[in-house]
Image 1 (cartoon, rainbow, N blue to C red):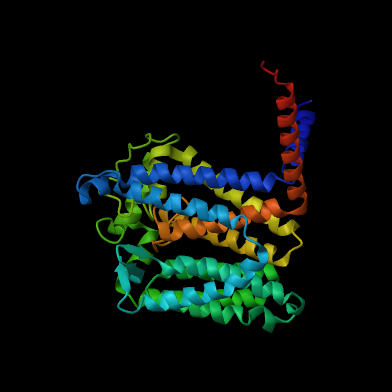
Image 2: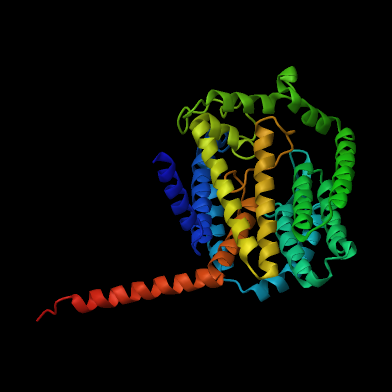
Length: 408
């Protein structure tokens, strides 16, 4: 009987997951929860730094993050309703703009932050063009591969022009010293090539070339080399290059199963650098425990599942490639950040999508997810189900209005 009950529950779960609007609701729910968790954690993780460096205002960074959320949400809503033709046309000027902005970071307009000159200063606002470049590259690659679908049996059409353009953008990012973003761009390129069917031998060659290049770049900077090699055992040089990774591990380890409670982190009191940006997952683990970290992982996996479902079932090639690219971008970003905090990867300085502080990353991420949500609700079965639900609501309102007693 227990087996029969389990089979019945499994069948019911499959029926729910097979509904046309399931990806739409999963994306809305997971994105909203990650955004809410992010706001709470930014407020908690940044409060000490805000108080120390901004005239006793504990809400400085949280207020700025809220401003970015209020900017990003309307942009994401607009993205859900953009026509595909406009997206495909806009991908090309977006990519060109991203390349120009990346080049400008190496001029007098560029601003150096934490040793990386990959920011642009525009008055009081600083923006990171590489975040826009990720988004633009995904849309551009999706449009190129959708146009060349009939030619993708040839490896030349698989590689050209995507790989040279992606290599140019990655090189511009590396000139600014941002190895973390360069790795994400490489992951996006590799993921897109896998989606369109590149042979395994090209993958092996690409990974080998990038590994050699990464080792060379690491060895060319003593500071970068220390940061990369210290992750193997950060406690060997705890007072030096292992300080950040070591305190991240201490924060995660001290959280236990349910955490110390929101606001109760000890590591954020000056021990953990970048507590509200690159290492916010460590503060989250300390305050919300294993349960909180697993919830965040589950939400990212939910986004991945919904995106894969959309990409695998759609008949529109641009939607398929764009959705796959956005999922690869966000999940690669999240995995690298979490691996960095857990000392499974070197400290290379990239934020946790939707959770870490930063408007330059939050706005493109939310807009990208808005596009995927729009793709989910525009699928024929999902659009038909939404129309049916709207018709039912209108009919119910009409019935309720007719049932009201007339006065006088």
